[in-house]
Length: 475
Figure 1 (cartoon, rainbow, N blue to C red):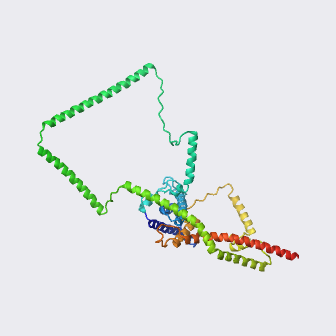
Figure 2 (figure 1 turned 45 degrees about the horizontal axis):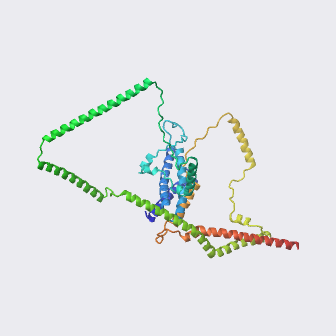
Figure 3 (figure 1 turned 120 degrees about the vertical axis):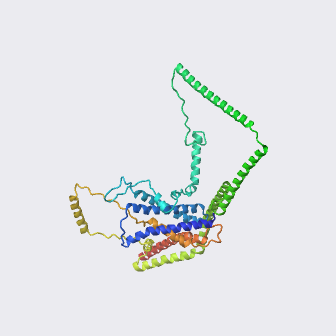
């Protein structure tokens, strides 16, 4: 497949992912707005999670295929981030399906609320039939990068195991399942019993041999009789030739009819063309190896270019970043000195001002209220002493808005802003984009590096000013 084909698959997967995340967030938003939805039944919750599970499995398969076959290094990074999020969501939904699997009627509660009945064997045949999807949709693909990313570790492990086998056993390979040989019978018997067993076996062998000999003689007699009977019948050579021609023409006509029928079915699109699958499979394997080599080459070129881009940004944009950082911190120091009449020692308060800690929403409770609650609790305990409170039955919830879904939503938005409408007509070999690398990685690294340098320089300057100010006070 061409690079454009994988881009289309990626776009389809991200579109479906955005739809699924939107569906999960809609119910949460309705509950937050106060429109409380009725509590769903177990069967309704199961169907909801089952449809989500199937959709996420389709997204999972498409993203895994894209990551395995794409050669653009920056695209592969984004695809892998989204793929790992989808894998986490698939695992969560699988746990929810097990938890809210509808119980068998034999164990279901006849009256009252139905408690959850976790069951590992989830049946999704009816939902697959409603969605008109094949059973292959539920096959969980094992991401191939699990093995590729750990190839060096696996090779080292194999060398270590091979060395131990050579040192301890003297062999290069040990079969996983050893061949088991049937042990010889060791039944003890007397001399007379052994002779009787041998005689029985010999009589049986002679009887079988005699029966086969008689069968062969009967077959030979039958063949001779048929040959003699056929030799007495004389056939006219012209009639024999006509019969042979008739048989051959019938066979030839049937063969041509079958060939023409197949050609017509192929022509109208009702039958696929016949190909040499061996040659096609070899071409696919060769193309896959070339694509994997392109992935390695492009990734190495991208990693090498990051250092060059860092030096380039540091040289071109570094002075402006350094001046802006220095000016911001100098202004804060000046304002602090003017307000407090003291010289700050470090920049901790500056970062607290820029990144204030989260405010705790829970207000402190009134001690009187706490005391009243304790008294009420003691009274309730006295009333319920000796009585066990019934455990509340857990109810299913369709609220799917979590930190994971919000992260997936941000990934979808990032895809729409960067890759969805990106023109790559001039990037046929799928090399990295330097400007995108600068925007996403390099400038942040350079800014962090310059920030540390400016902070260290400013701390030293503040220490010197504080020392001089202390000397001036003493003098």
